[in-house]
Image (cartoon, rainbow, N blue to C red; front, side, top):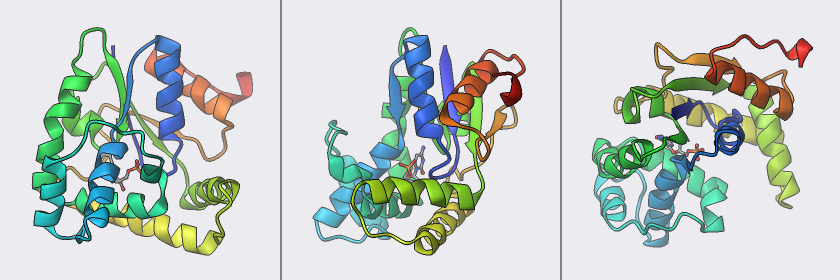
Amino acid sequence: MIIAVDGPAASGKGTIARALARHYGLPHLDTGLLYRAVGLAVLEAGGDPASASDALEAAHHLSSALDDPGLKSEAAGKAASLVSVHPDVRAALLDRQKRFADQQGGAVLDGRDIGTVIAPHADAKLFVTASPEVRARRRCDELLGMGLDVHLEAVLHDIRSRDERDSARSAAPLRMADDAALLDTSDLTIEQAVAAAIALAENRPFTAAND
Ligand code: DC
């Protein structure tokens, strides 16, 4: 079983994808980490993530480890969004993602273009979203929990510009696949969102009130 989970930043798609992977006993790939690794490598080399050649150079020499805690930083997230605009960078990361999706037994992948580009043949496709305000609140709480000094307005501004860049780019923009199920987590707890995701993956109805 291949499960594609797409959606904008801080929508809850990562949490949901990890829970689905646990539920079905499937391996999981957070594809945002690949773009973050490219973005961070460009920054560490003193390059410019907006430069196609700097980004492609980093993509070609990407290490296979995706466990660097620095990948979770806001700087890496912003650099990831910038490098992901370049079609050659996306092409360089394509094979690794497709092989992961098509491994024997199936997999869960989350990102922006899983249901549209990486695994259009996925057995279940979810598009996870939430209002920008709710996503900003969640991201803010997460960053405050990490001891960082952040402000809701600034986080909301970053979320909106990330949405804009990820949706407006011409190469594999953030877009809900025609056959994906929409899951708006704005008013759901994590438990409700996960239960809804499992119900949608199994093509059965879910109402938060009954759960
Ligand atoms: O999901 P995330 O916040 O870790 O992703 C970081 C950036 O990487 C995101 O702003 C756009 C890019 N990305 C992408 O273009 N395609 C994907 N499948 C995953 C992430």
